[in-house]
Image 1 (cartoon, rainbow, N blue to C red):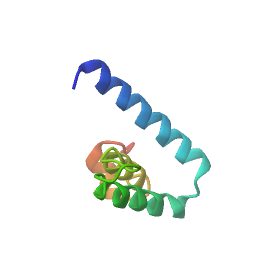
Image 2: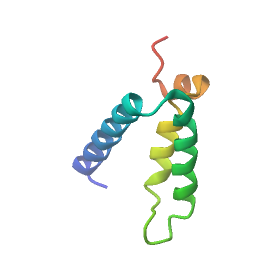
Image 3: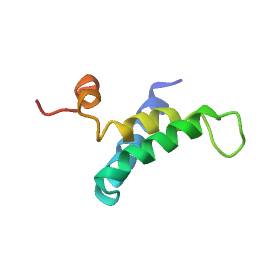
Image 4: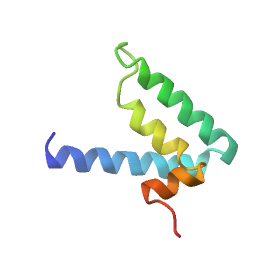
Length: 76
């Protein structure tokens, strides 16, 4: 994977996280993250893909304090 494609993927994930943070209520974010992870587990199917796994973890991490700290997203 080239550096440009890594930067593009990172930018898209951050943009999706910002949209989720603004539009999805707190209690539903974790559920949305779990649904994305579950979709990523069946990534061999044509409609869903393995790209859903990291996106699901990123969305679910918005509501899980210890995961935010581990990923370095916490302010403290």
